Image (cartoon, rainbow, N blue to C red; front, side):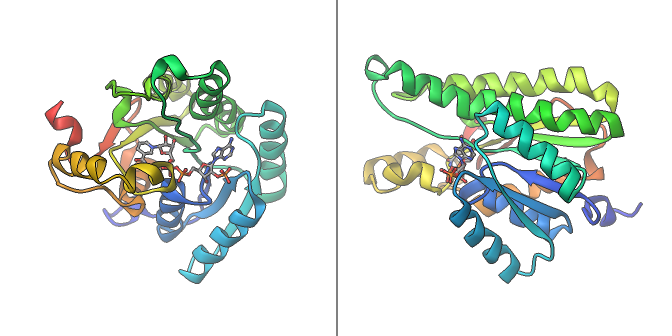
Length: 257
Ligand code: NDP
């Protein structure tokens, strides 16, 4: 295999959770650009329709949309069963759906804590388990879990978020330990500060913007499209012996921790 075809995802089918916008959309666009059929996901069918149209306008040939809530075991099981029978086997799964909430820790309602853990962590288990069954039967599959620079750090007002991201990093290693013997590669991508709706309030805060620019050695926020290359690498035959690894895409943020 030559070095360019190592990254070719032609004939592969990828499900990217939380891909109606932000990092998930950036990753879905990159995988589609490398030749994969892409299944977009989110909870809002209208937003998914818009996202699918944008990908098609950019030249993606094969885009589907599957609305389901990644925190609901029943919805996930139904959606994955539907996808595998009606659309086709899933070769690549990106567990990307996530949420953030900010408040001094003593003010976090338990309900919000649980929602963050369910959305950012439990979802990767529920969706990962449902998709891995088919991958294990076919003895091939690539799973990418979206972690964070907060997997290793504590910052004010986001302790439950950081806890969910620390846990998904170790879930990634555990999935690799259990599933690599069945032919799966399970890895993580840990983004730094990326311009998305999740950070809408922070992006409007000049003081926070200056902190991100100063704290990130590259001196700027990242763009969702800049996660695409790492996703193609981990989804492709270029990474057959990479397993249980967390790849930081953070403008050197963690290099200075
Ligand atoms: P956005 O808020 O821009 O996008 C989140 C996506 O997830 C949307 O498509 C949203 O669609 C979907 N989503 C949220 N909850 C659910 C749910 N319960 N079921 C299905 N889909 C859901 O966030 P980002 O793109 O910034 O974040 C994506 C991932 O990257 C998250 O895991 C986040 O923690 C991580 N990350 C982000 C960083 C950043 O700086 N932006 C840095 C490090 C990690 P809808 O609401 O319509 O369901």
